[in-house]
Image 1 (tube, rainbow, N blue to C red):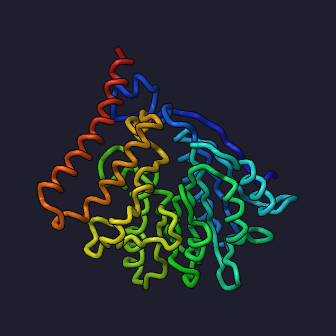
Image 2: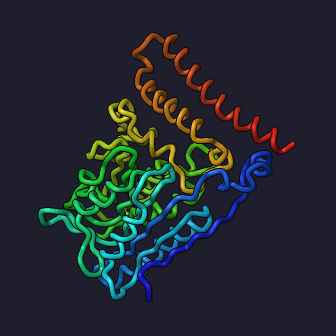
Image 3: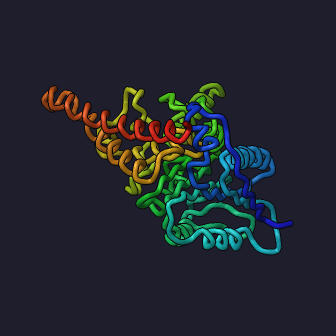
Length: 334
């Protein structure tokens, strides 16, 4: 039985704008398919296999729903999982604008010189993964949903990458629950904080962090995992209390650096409006939202009128982008 199962399916979904749906024929037809590589690593013990399988199924279902290309690494074969993983990452090498998602499910270890992700057969070292990923010059979303994954932040962080880890260090060695909550959140509108009909990586991450904390409270257990997000390439990562705008401990430093801005703009299942944006509009919006993130901490520091004028200019420019899309969609639907 082959270790890899490759699915390439394309489908539309119901949306929120009739004009956009008439023009684009579904939520996802305006966005190029992403590449999802889901790796079911060594469970460590048999009792964890069921959970890994369930999480992988959530990703497979989301890939099918979004019309994305899926590569699922599971089971055993004549070649090791590491050999297959190397080959698949080499296949994805090269430049492009279509995102690549790498989802790692299972266990990690950071006791040696190099942290590792456990596979069937030889394990995957963080430094080797960094070398393999350096050949992929496309936007990357890396979901390291396993124990000790915090040790992977520094070697894997980089430009045009969104990196999520289940733990904040290599010392958090217990089985983690972040991955199941994130996989559920990324394709569920339950995590849609801004009510725009889609869930960004940032929203899914915040939702999953909240679910992790709630789980440990319900179980009456000490919190043994603290997820991190790095989307600026800094190699340190931010915890959710620093980036959650609703948290009393939210860090103004995090906001001023633009941390979380890129993760707010990446979606697995985009809304019709998001799907309708062209590359130029999406790039323009990204710059404006980064400017907005840098402006917010200045409230109360700058002259109030200067602050209001700057805020109004950014919001009007953002609105003009979406107005362009709606006009184009309305014109094509007539």
